[in-house]
Amino acid sequence: MAKEIGGILVADNHPLCREGLTTLFARNLGLSDIFEASDFSGVLTKIATRGSIGLVTIDLGLPGLRKGEGLRDLRVRYPDVRVVVVAASRDRDLVLDSLGAGVHGYIPKDVPVPEMAEALRAVIAGRMYVPPFVSDLTARKEPVVDQDGVANDAALTSRQFEVLNLLAAGRSNKEIARLLSIAEGTVKVHIAAAFRMLGVHNRVSAAAAMQARAFNDDPIETYLPGILEERRAKPILRRSFNALPQISYRR
Image 1 (spheres, rainbow, N blue to C red):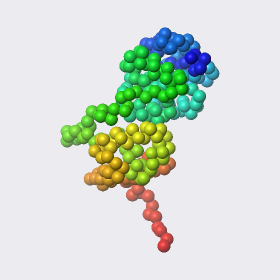
Image 2 (tube, rainbow, N blue to C red):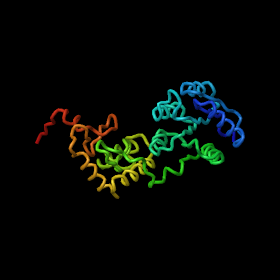
Image 3 (cartoon, one colour):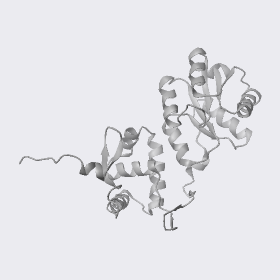
Image 4 (tube, rainbow, N blue to C red):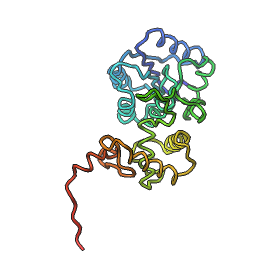
């Protein structure tokens, strides 16, 4: 197995976590060519100077990482290196954003050692690892409370909003994945979760819900439904649209 994957780089700013993972690789997976890094610059330096590294485990709280941005940068720079996030958070959106950045797996730090070893073994074997709780669409976040103290269960995450906005524009799942630089499977999970929060069951109903949200009582901060700013792959603010020059059409 060590010959297949090459060297291992454990990146975490907590010495105890690094030691724990290093021990797991050695004791449970029989790997001994292991290096450590305590910040993102150290990760890049180690990979550049140690050409044998084939797998990196990385914590989202690593200094200098910048989460999804840093993960995507790491994957682009070293496409042959397999990257696994090992983090404390079980936030589904954080997991999906990490997977959308191109990592090969996301492992919560609180899983039992045998389960973590199996997850790492799967990644080393060339497969992806996604924690089972990601598929639990009944799991809900803490309700968002508005300024009047009323709980709002239909609060969409920013990523769900972007996906739904593109869906309302008639984009396919594949197009949405390309525009947002995430996996098509990730798009489907975001859509399912957003449908549940909006209380709808199909794309037409979701588009109607987006229209209703756009035409609310606060026109300054609302978004135009179904319209995407292609350059940044972000929904266009209504105020931005109002500031655009008028377009004349020839008959």
